[in-house]
Amino acid sequence: MNFKSYEHKAQYYETDQMGIIHHSNYIRWFEEARIDLMEQTGLGYQAMEDAGIISPVLSVKCQYRTMVHFNDIVLIEARLKKYNGIKMTLSYIVRDKETKEIRCNGESEHCFLSKEGKLLSLKKSNPVFDQMFREILCRD
Image (cartoon, rainbow, N blue to C red; front, side, top):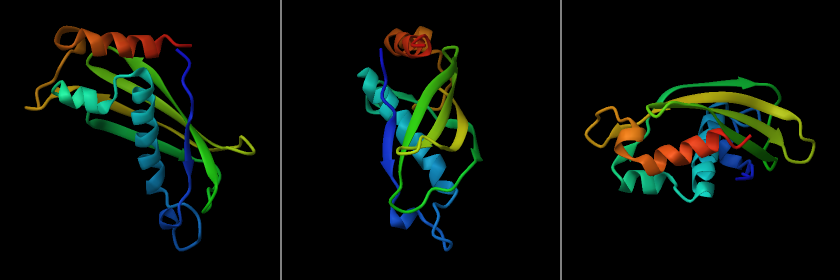
């Protein structure tokens, strides 16, 4: 399976007083790219939620390298770095679309819960999603 990077055009409302993208928006962009990655598999977040599975963020980190400004277009590459059926870690690289310069990179860690808040093993509770994540992990 070949996945495309997620494309985002920096919006004016995302800027801070200095005219650069506020640091908190990169975390939102990570989420957008993560959701896009899953949708590219044909089993997106909506399908997970319809199946009674939620995937909260356990941790997130972001290393800012160079600034993004209003109207810049960035490509966000989301990759599944680790997956064991109970937790997953994704990595992100945000690049300027034109220059390919890295603007930031980061990671997020998630687990899988039932809507009642109980920890799930996807291998046991939903083999279809488990297989999807294993295929994403093996794409490289």
